Every structure is written in C-alpha cells, then in structure tokens.
Length: 634
Image (cartoon, rainbow, N blue to C red):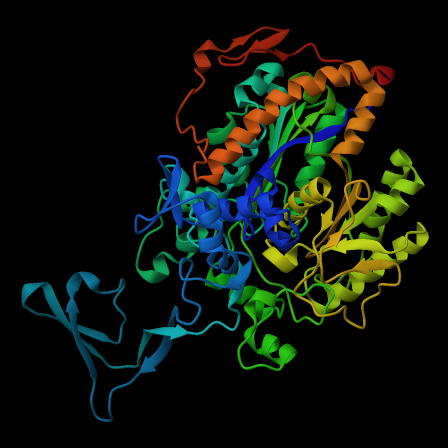
C-alpha cells in the first residue's frame, strides 16, 4: 500500500508575485477574479513592491499619504500591473541599452617612433614583455618604451539584442527580507521562497520536526545555471581578467546544489535526505519525483522540493541568444510589423512566435504522506501520484525534440486513468504545457498532446501555458506550472494564453482547447492536471497532479468518514494560522525564516547505540533496527 504524497504548503516568487495563497496565480487571471480577491492581490503586490508600507493600521506611501486597502488597489493598480509579468529588463538587473564590455585592439606608434607611456611600477605586468624597455622615474613611477605593437582593451558599451524577461515585481528585492550577507540573488530567492512555503502551511516547522524521525525529511532543490552573478560564478570566473581576485564565497556559493544546501542549513535545520538533481528545464520535476518516491516508499514522511534560478545576467542572455533560442527585438518587430517591440507579449506559446523569454523564479512545495497530513490537520492543496521521466534516444542535435515526451505524457495519463478511471481523464483533466514559445515547440508539443488525446478519447483538452505570463525560468519552470495548477484547482479558471491573437496554423489542436482568454470551467470540471516539461538535451518529464477534492476522496476511502471529520476540525486551526501569515505578507511582513548559526547541534551530545541515534533538538531518534530487504537472497 503506497503512501499518498499530498501538497500541504507552497510558496515562492516569480514575475507574477508571491505564490503562497495563490497570489501569483491570481495575477495571471486577475480580470476573471471576484472583486475582493482582485483587490487583495493588488494590495499585496503594492506592499511587496514597496509602493506602500503598513503602519498603525493603514497603508502609507513614500510621501506619507495614507490609504485604505481599497484605495491602494485603485491608486496603484496600473503601476502594479505594468510592473509585473514579462516586461523590458529593468536597471535593477542591468541596463540592456548599455551593457559594459571591453574591446581589444592593437596599438602601434606612428612611423619612425616608438610607443611610450608612464605608469606606476607596481602596475607593471609580470613578467615584463621582452619588447619593453622600463626606465625608473621619481615617485615610484616608470617609463615604458615598446619596440613592438601593444595589445590593449578599451571600455565599451553595447545594446542587447534581447531585452525582455520575466522579472520579480519592480521594487521587490529578496535580499531585503533577511540578512543576506552578499548572497547571490539565486540563493536569496531560494531562502525567501522556501520560507514562504513553510510559513504557508499554517503549522510551525518545529511541530513537523517533532512528528517525524530526523531522517524522515527530504529536501531536493537545484538550479541548472548555478549562480552566475558577481557574488558567485560570474564574479569568480572573470575576477583575474578584470584585475581583481576571487573571494572565498564566490566559488562555493555558485554551486548548483546550493539552493538545497541553504534550505537545509538556514531554513529547515534538516538532517534528513537531500539532493540537487539537474535535468535542464525539467529539473523541478526531477526533484519532485525524488521527493514523491521517498514518500510513497516510506523512506520519508515529509519532502520539501523546489528550485531557484536567477539567470538575468548579460552573459547568460547573450549565450541563449547566440543559440537563437530567445525572442529578440528584431524578430518581435517583424512578427507584429511595428517599430517598437511589444515586450509584454514576448512569450507566445502555440501562437506565431520567435523564441522563449528567459525569467527568474524560485518556488518550493512541502509534501507529506497523507497519514501525517491527517494527524497534523494540514491543509491539502493537491496530490502528486506520479512523475515520469524519459530520454530521447539517438539524436542528431542535442537540442532537438524526440520520442521521450510521448512516453512521459502517455504514461502520466495512463497512471491517472488507472487510479481514477477513464471519465476522470476524459472529462476532468487539463494540461500545463511546457509551452516554451519557440516555433519548434508549438509544433512538436502540440502533436504529442493531440496524439495522446486521440488515443485516450479526450476531446477539447484544456491547455494552459504559464510561460506566457512569467517567462521561462529554466530549472523552476515546472514549479511555476505547479503553483499555477494549484490555483486552477482552487478557482476553477484555466489561464488563457493572452499573448497570442490566435493559435498558429501549424499547431496540432484537433483534440485540444487552446484559448487566448481565461476558461472558467469550475472546480468540479478540473480535478486532474498533467504538468509537461521538455528539457534541453532530451530531459522529458510529465507529472500527474490530483486536486484537493480528489485527494480527500481517496483519503476518505482509506481512513473513513469519522477520521476525516476529525481531520477537518483540526484543519480549521491550521487554516486560520495560514491565513494569519497571508494577511501579514499582504502588508509586506514576510517574517522570513533564516537561522544563521542558530540552534546548532553539539555533536558531542549525539548518542549512538546499535539500535538508534539520538540527536539534540529532535524528539525522535533515528532508527537503526533496519529490515533485511533481501531476505529471500541470503
């Protein structure tokens, strides 16, 4: 009997805002929301973006003017909407119209003369070139005469061909929420996202720790580009070339495993299983599968899974642009026949498009087995039953699509059918597409969906593509999909692909429902989701996600109505505590968990016997009375 992995907390930040309590999802369907939910999300974004602060029971702007919540929503609505989702890269990252660089050239003296310059002796290169003659001058200076050419580099500035990205809301800086100590932006985002997910549970983390053994918690998180800003690999790799030295932090903090390491060490205090799995753009689903397998097998009772990516640096953008992978300004102009590119519509999945739009994001999810969730009264937002991963086999181009995604998608649908039956798949499911916004993807991915739909007799299969709103965040891309999916389960609205005017002619959509407007289908209609990811290099993954209603129905069958009634009573307190965090966050008060050097374990007080290990700070011991899983072989 497998344990059911249920999602009991989720949080993070992307171009749509804060994920917990469904606020990032709400931003994508904001025109389809009830008035109260719309207002709340606008106010929360305004506070995140520091347009207002909350003081003495009211909101206050930079000029000291006070507002009610309704007035904040009205006054700052346009600014909030324009400063979220995909847009032109802002100067908080760098100036896309004036990117610094250096240009090398060879300098020669006029005919009959020699090159000569004066500098400080300590600034001479080592060793001194053979063609140089150095003469000492006063004050520690020297004169250099050169018999040959001189290779020099000049400061230069260039305009990027790609200027659109999915960025965190303008004014929101993750490092401001805790003592970030020169952390790379990607790790700042990992800390605040994991904290948001934990706070969103409405259950104190220590309560969770006390309920399980220390080794029954798993953490899986990574970034595929690693950390590449000046505080990590970006600064480390070019330090000597720019006349500086690498720091002690740049190399270790650049590792792509650091998101998991930071969450373990500074947010959760975890001593259980951990890992940082990378599978290109499918990385989140790779990590999710590890967490799900830990729970279904009983190795863990809790799994915290996520990714963080901060790729908005010139070098990464230019690298993807060199692959012709990104939507650049010239191609956006040609698509629309305009002088000025429409950055808001840079990502156009399944429409006439020209490349993907890079983005930053960090998303984390807390999963438990259903028995623990029942005992703690945890609020259940969904369940993850399966994640399938397949490669593409032999291929000519490492970036080209292949057969692996046919396997993952068909198996995910078949797995849902095996559990819930054919009607659930045919009538109550929808797709969260990879939807990268490249011409190749719109054809190949839609063909997969259409063939699978035909095979399983699915008609008018709803398709969502979250990248049209928040861009392609690489490792967390499917985490963005999952956060949006939980919102779909809550509100019954599939976000439309609003950046397209119509579906492209070469898209296979005989059995699909791809809409440019929100599809309000209702909670009863939307009970199963398939998250699809097509990663660079042949990293294909598809996850099967069940709605909270389905998860509770399954739990009722296992535990009975009486146990579920008692669970719902416990859940009320949890929901109240989760809402208290939500209300504080709406005021910009995130209370980020960051325990640097706190509650450290004194290894001298770890007690080890042949039956168990007892660790200070943990109520339960690590069991060493392990079963023989190979009894039939020995």
